[in-house]
Length: 108
Image (cartoon, rainbow, N blue to C red; front, top):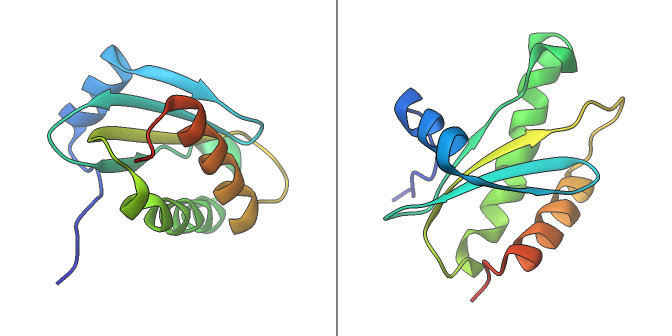
Protein backbone atom coordinates (compact mmCIF):
# COMPACT_ATOMS: atom_id res chain seq x y z
CA UNK A 1 0.00 0.00 0.00
CA UNK A 2 1.39 3.41 -0.92
CA UNK A 3 0.70 6.66 0.88
CA UNK A 4 -0.34 9.39 -1.53
CA UNK A 5 1.22 12.52 -0.12
CA UNK A 6 1.26 14.66 -3.27
CA UNK A 7 -0.62 17.92 -3.60
CA UNK A 8 -2.10 17.85 -7.11
CA UNK A 9 -5.22 20.01 -7.34
CA UNK A 10 -4.96 23.59 -8.52
CA UNK A 11 -7.42 24.76 -5.84
CA UNK A 12 -5.16 23.29 -3.12
CA UNK A 13 -2.09 25.04 -4.56
CA UNK A 14 -4.03 28.33 -4.75
CA UNK A 15 -5.19 27.95 -1.13
CA UNK A 16 -1.64 27.38 0.10
CA UNK A 17 -0.20 30.29 -1.89
CA UNK A 18 -3.02 32.65 -0.89
CA UNK A 19 -3.35 31.89 2.84
CA UNK A 20 -0.17 30.00 3.73
CA UNK A 21 2.88 31.10 5.69
CA UNK A 22 6.44 30.93 4.35
CA UNK A 23 9.79 29.72 5.62
CA UNK A 24 13.06 30.32 3.81
CA UNK A 25 16.43 28.59 3.59
CA UNK A 26 19.46 28.92 1.34
CA UNK A 27 18.07 26.52 -1.30
CA UNK A 28 14.32 26.31 -0.66
CA UNK A 29 11.21 28.24 0.19
CA UNK A 30 8.32 26.35 1.77
CA UNK A 31 4.75 27.62 1.91
CA UNK A 32 2.52 25.76 4.38
CA UNK A 33 -1.12 25.78 5.42
CA UNK A 34 -2.94 23.65 8.09
CA UNK A 35 -5.06 20.80 6.71
CA UNK A 36 -6.53 17.41 7.58
CA UNK A 37 -3.63 15.43 6.13
CA UNK A 38 0.00 15.79 5.12
CA UNK A 39 0.46 16.63 1.44
CA UNK A 40 3.28 18.27 -0.49
CA UNK A 41 3.46 20.02 -3.82
CA UNK A 42 6.52 21.11 -5.75
CA UNK A 43 6.64 24.30 -7.83
CA UNK A 44 9.65 24.40 -10.15
CA UNK A 45 9.58 27.24 -12.66
CA UNK A 46 11.03 27.38 -16.16
CA UNK A 47 13.82 29.60 -14.80
CA UNK A 48 15.47 26.37 -13.60
CA UNK A 49 15.97 25.03 -17.13
CA UNK A 50 14.38 22.54 -19.46
CA UNK A 51 11.88 19.86 -18.57
CA UNK A 52 14.55 17.23 -17.88
CA UNK A 53 16.24 19.43 -15.27
CA UNK A 54 12.92 20.53 -13.70
CA UNK A 55 11.73 16.94 -13.40
CA UNK A 56 15.02 15.89 -11.78
CA UNK A 57 14.64 18.70 -9.22
CA UNK A 58 11.08 17.54 -8.46
CA UNK A 59 12.26 13.93 -8.04
CA UNK A 60 14.95 15.06 -5.59
CA UNK A 61 12.43 17.17 -3.64
CA UNK A 62 9.90 14.31 -3.48
CA UNK A 63 12.51 11.87 -2.19
CA UNK A 64 13.72 14.40 0.39
CA UNK A 65 10.19 15.04 1.63
CA UNK A 66 9.36 11.32 1.71
CA UNK A 67 12.11 10.74 4.27
CA UNK A 68 10.53 13.29 6.68
CA UNK A 69 6.89 12.12 6.51
CA UNK A 70 7.10 9.70 9.51
CA UNK A 71 8.59 12.44 11.72
CA UNK A 72 6.03 15.15 10.97
CA UNK A 73 3.63 15.56 13.87
CA UNK A 74 1.10 17.98 12.39
CA UNK A 75 -0.97 17.89 9.23
CA UNK A 76 -0.18 20.58 6.68
CA UNK A 77 -0.20 21.21 2.97
CA UNK A 78 3.36 22.09 1.93
CA UNK A 79 4.55 23.64 -1.33
CA UNK A 80 8.30 23.59 -1.89
CA UNK A 81 9.88 26.14 -4.22
CA UNK A 82 13.59 25.66 -5.00
CA UNK A 83 15.84 28.65 -5.59
CA UNK A 84 17.63 28.88 -8.93
CA UNK A 85 21.14 27.35 -8.76
CA UNK A 86 23.48 25.49 -11.08
CA UNK A 87 23.60 22.24 -9.08
CA UNK A 88 21.06 20.46 -6.90
CA UNK A 89 21.65 17.50 -4.61
CA UNK A 90 19.54 15.23 -2.46
CA UNK A 91 21.70 15.90 0.61
CA UNK A 92 21.32 19.65 0.22
CA UNK A 93 17.52 19.43 -0.07
CA UNK A 94 17.31 17.09 2.95
CA UNK A 95 19.45 19.46 5.00
CA UNK A 96 17.32 22.48 4.05
CA UNK A 97 14.06 20.65 4.76
CA UNK A 98 15.37 19.48 8.12
CA UNK A 99 16.28 23.05 9.10
CA UNK A 100 12.92 24.43 7.96
CA UNK A 101 10.87 21.71 9.68
CA UNK A 102 12.78 22.36 12.93
CA UNK A 103 12.36 26.12 12.55
CA UNK A 104 8.61 25.73 11.93
CA UNK A 105 8.15 23.21 14.77
CA UNK A 106 6.67 20.49 12.54
CA UNK A 107 8.44 17.51 14.14
CA UNK A 108 6.83 15.29 16.81
